Length: 309
Image 1 (tube, rainbow, N blue to C red):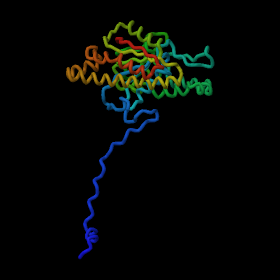
Image 2: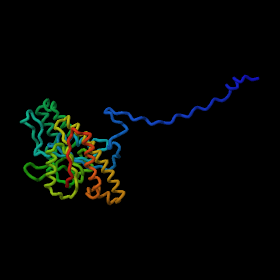
Image 3: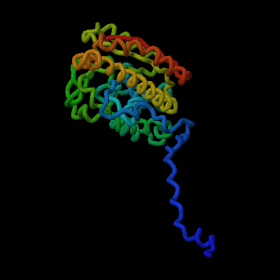
């Protein structure tokens, strides 16, 4: 009689267990404590999708507006952006508070400012951050532009417009608009959103828009994000402005889709061209978006109004 223990050993081994179901990786926390699966809106949006057009403004178009300009145009999904200053002249710190370095808007390049200050006192202007700031600016656009001289609605194509000192006329320069970061999308000479970085700049922009008399009859949202004029605060402010831009653009894209569903291509064209009727849904959402943003950035007091080009 056969040993039953040997008969059991001769049987075929059982089939292997099925592989475990794939479990998606758990989201990992970023260095700032946020979930890396929750990407900002600008990272989730297709680079070819709808984009609001932005304009950033400070006093001299050198520090705060240029940091915001850089942030908006260097985002994973960059925004069309231009930038300006509202001062009568470009003023940069000098050897004392009573000796600023003064330049004209519209006809002085960041490169020429950099070269001049480098020759004057490299140690001083490197230590106070002016040379690194100008080095950054050179990579963004040609030179500072004045808001009050902006010819809204005039195409920003070809050679840059340069002002002639003591006249209201201008001449083309050797530099071209297409060399600016964020150029694509701004060729038409209009924007959807203006963000100033100081309340007096906001006042200057709003007053100037009123004085122009709304010749284009095109709405524009004008925000102020109050940022202290130093390099550290400009970095913080630039990050906050990008977050506000992401929230505004996400809402605008949603409202554009709703308009397309209701009115088709003609309605979308109206939305893209800034028609107040087509954008009514977006306009109504802006105060709520700003309030939610302000809760996250209480240290940066904000203002907002709806104005017209």
